[in-house]
Length: 149
Image (cartoon, rainbow, N blue to C red; front, side, top):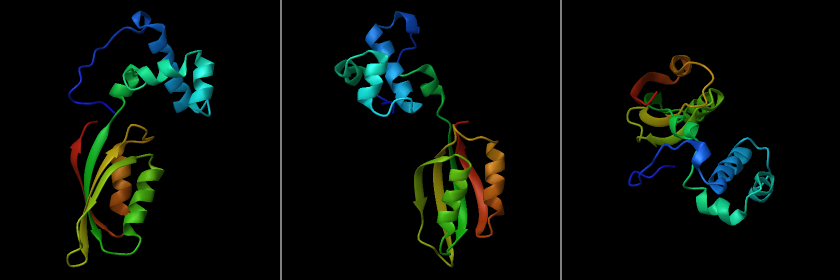
């Protein structure tokens, strides 16, 4: 979402130009599904589509910046049909969003799986989600490699 080679500033919303404030409103309407399309959202926010497209990749509500919580975990998984699918289902049920996934070729019936997860929408503690993964019969080990939480 955010480029590393760009400078960002924290600016009080009331000093932003109206088109930028309305662009943020359009993004919120779309995110909250109060508008079915960009066309509908720009009409609701009373901003032109050209202004929206001009600013949409440049203005963000502050919560969007601090919201991202990323955790990287490593799993040691038995090479069994449906094992990875069950892991992904468990993560989806915990409201984790899989950002990256890497699985090694199984050796002696076991594979290493490394997952980077956005856990910003998780309902419960991350510890509970890890405990649920550890209880899966085909999981031998779960380790947290890094945490931005």
